[in-house]
Length: 342
Image 1 (spheres, rainbow, N blue to C red):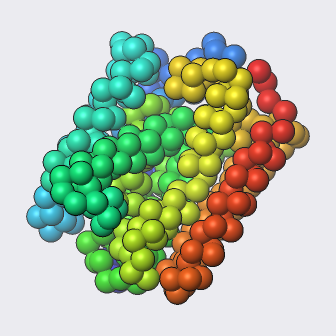
Image 2 (image 1 turned 90 degrees about the vertical axis):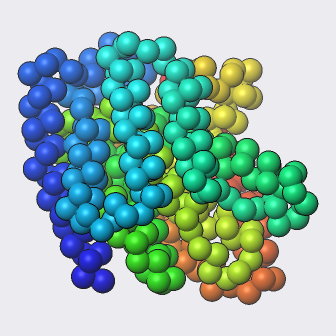
Image 3 (image 1 turned 45 degrees about the vertical axis):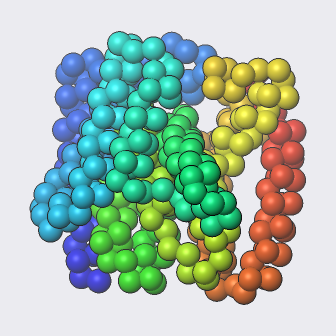
């Protein structure tokens, strides 16, 4: 436990120290997000490069706790987020097509994890090789790319991305501690510390933004932790549902946008807009702070339910999942009725 607390405090300290430096460098180099797009909700230019603060906090903490670098999974993961950070930074500078990160960057980073055997063993439980294995690989590719993209587009309001990342990291931490996964618990603590440290400067009114690179990094790391989740009640369906509960906000937000835009005859990945749940809550009269708190509460509720799920029997697990699906679909249909800027 002392190692976990130490990792959290080191990452927190690095984030608090590095973020103002990143902000200063962004202002000096004019690396800022200018609100010249009607989809943006901030009114003045905000420094970017926040992703570099998150990245350096994580990498420096891993170097400080050098024993972590003996884990090849972590080494490959750090390599993948380095790629995403570079692609995101180039995208922020307008040097790449906006779809490059989705079509090329995220899938390549996902394949890095798959290449070292990190995947969801789901379909292989029911189908014989090679069909089950192939479907597992494709599902894992979709899973990692999907959550990386979900967190990327979740970064449209002050404090939303890193706040949800911090909450998710905290619940991953609890699950890994409960199962004795010490290394993964330490990695979760590092993600938690760096997110909380950055949130100090990113909560409304934000003094610095993550940028595309930082937003993708948080999503990719949460996808990585979700793939390492243990199945505590031994039921394979929990292998998928438990991390979905922890990551309920980005999953819900993306599902809402896909449903809403498809219903309007739009192609979701190529039709961005102010129809996310945060936009709808703000349009309904909630300010940025209250909207963030509502979504934080939703994330905490999902995390608590993930802990509750691990203690259920097989029959109760099935009932719980069916009820959750009904509530989930009903909530999407209800939120779709809220106003938004078309």
